[in-house]
Image (cartoon, rainbow, N blue to C red):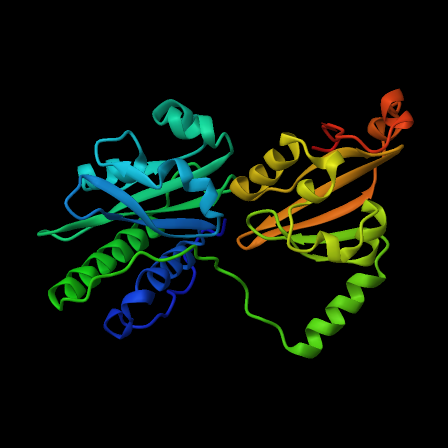
Length: 318
């Protein structure tokens, strides 16, 4: 990561936000201000000592399913941050496993995390967390700490003001922070360019659904593009229906590091899938396998039968 802070992000004054759009811009600004790749905001449930997930960005909501509702006394960073009114920092995979084994068991990936209370002196509203990939240093820098504290305090003051005005903040839907949309002519040329490449290329959303596939991907996988779009690869292709594939997808999204796996497309083609993640999805390159995986013998059952479910084997490059 760069040593110095990025320019402070500009965003609308809280008084100009509508109730539906208060939380998402605040989360976006906080993530942008410290170059975090994902984050979420929890709000206290009315009349309960429970934090409820209100909005999340950069990861599919399914990743947070075990923690959609978190008891205020739970050994979870967002609960601890609000309970103790302090910033909670987790500097990596080993520290997560030591301090919060429940989270490490479900998300055994390298990433760093900061959780902060969203509260004023008079009122506790909830908590916020942001995460970085494994490339982030194990310590939080002074400028990151200052920006996070300032952003969480501003959000708390905004919520206090809205509450005083009698306009409650509604819980939002899944939030995905994406890149600006290119012009139509640029988009058309990009599709043409990708269509000329010999390797298969796919784009997956945060839930693993195919949002784009070029002709080479269709040929490599043996499935028309129209049958790939809108579905996870492992649902469309029986020979990819293995938990390892989904695990590699999750690992790429959480760690923000490229990963890969090799799979056998019956009757005898070994393919390598290279996954390149970002905050709004995963780009997948599909190419013929090279090295030991390409030379592995094809199981007799695969050669003799119609395409059954075939497991994945780790890629030599993963």
